[in-house]
Image (cartoon, rainbow, N blue to C red; front, side):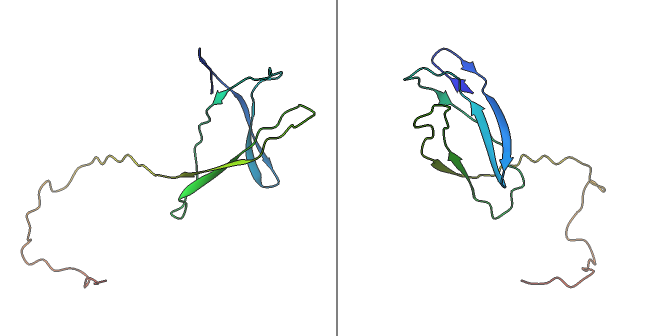
Length: 114
């Protein structure tokens, strides 16, 4: 999303994979007038996380079709991950009530102590 002082507009972006590197390429405008300032927001979904994944690193760089000084330095941003799961359990218990302790109850297997 491109945000300027008046409104929001959608970016034209494409996902690319090249040499095992994945990137998102967005067209910010061509031609762009000298001195133009843009505020751009990107929304990502991160899939196939494991328990070991604690953060995601983004390397950002601007490339221009300008013949002179056409690439900005790479800016790296590391974002800490937080996993949120909304869980709702529905169902029926049969029997509806169980009174404990159950008379003469014995476990089928000997419980292990860790």
